Image 1 (cartoon, rainbow, N blue to C red):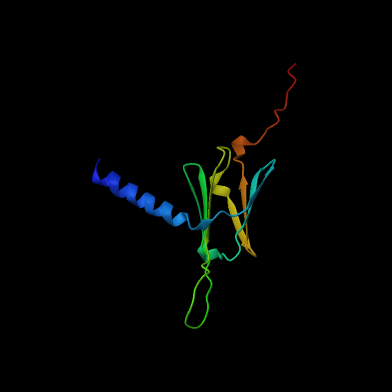
Image 2: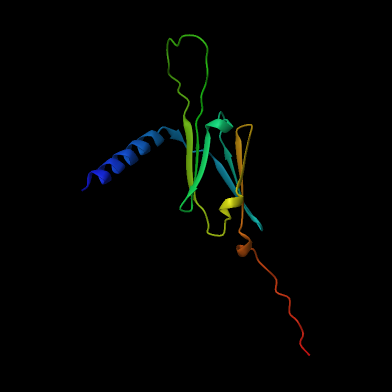
Length: 128
């Protein structure tokens, strides 16, 4: 085994261990004629703490939460968890047109189908 494989495997294991402290956000997915809409509950996350990526057809959503308190911490039992979730996207989704909005802790992703995936009616011409 080469050192490159070992290093990449160790990094992958470290990332996986970090994600074990994440919470899986509740998600609803709706299908319309024009595409998909994904709605995820992610309370405590703001736009700067949210990362949405698509790589090799896999949508990844990751959000961090932070609670800022003034004063010196004397005791700690509560630690806010981040959110992490992945979905395999259908090939018909136009990745360049995905729109994301975050409002009041609710993430809404609108994922339209590519124009080539949309149904199309073919007009029939009469030839005389």
